[in-house]
Image (cartoon, rainbow, N blue to C red; front, side, top):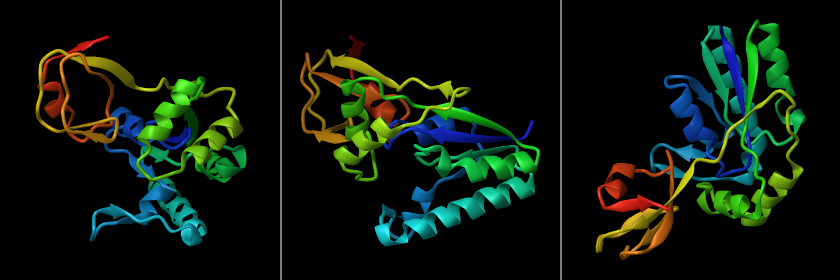
Length: 197
């Protein structure tokens, strides 16, 4: 059945990775993509163009729905119902089922985790505010944060990107988080000897 999937959760919760892993080949629509400069391969946020970005996202979703795409993913934070209710209404008018997939932030540790790994430079205070304002959908699927704590069990002298930060050295006994589906090159990291803790 044709489905509009509404992703919901603060920046850094893993919405985009989850969508790409769960519905490969889906039509993914995000206002963030409006700020992605393909020439420089950089994210260039401009708050004065936020309205334009959301209009662009709405148009992309509408075009995908009208084209009959099987899976259309709305990949914005969607903290409040008013942020996605027009998408929901349009989808239902076009005979699409609507599903909600939510990332809940239940602990301070979760909040620190998502604030640290958000890739768009959203200030920690804004991530915290969005987490506190979150309005859950009663029928939503709650998606757990995807993370795994590991410990290095050999001496590695190569620089590593872990938790979005560059580490010059990972020494035996070091603990850190690997964010499942979020690392650019997880196989490189996992070539070293690690154990789950």
